[in-house]
Image 1 (cartoon, rainbow, N blue to C red):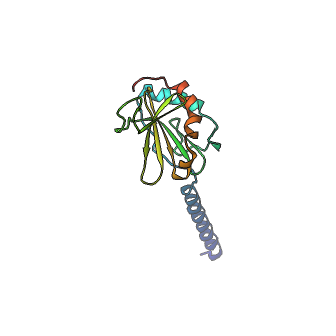
Image 2: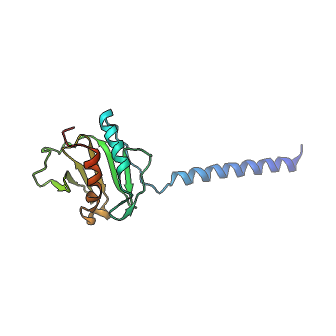
Image 3: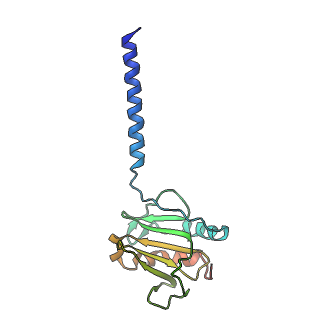
Length: 165
């Protein structure tokens, strides 16, 4: 038995094992946000793809940094990320498509349902459009006001016609 050759093979095998463990650990700690990708019907999915192509490079001064998994139905800006998901289900809280009550806001011609969460984050969901678009502001961005909605209003108006989905 050749002991030096056996030692070299063991060292090479150990190095390969360490490399694969390191690679797996690095890919598991990706800094990008992760979101659940919506699964809308075909018509809404097509509208969402149109919206994705028109979304701005910056929202509220933050660079685009799309979340994983990569999808034409999601987008993100900054870290912690402002997240947009297109083709989401209609929220049960949505009563009036124009949101005349206290839970709604209109920004540059787009109506939004406002939902505040216990963790300090906010979710805004469009109403009166043929596909529902959701924008989530993490607690760290909640003080930014309606700036993010202002930046995405024009692309939403252009890509997703008014109507009830």
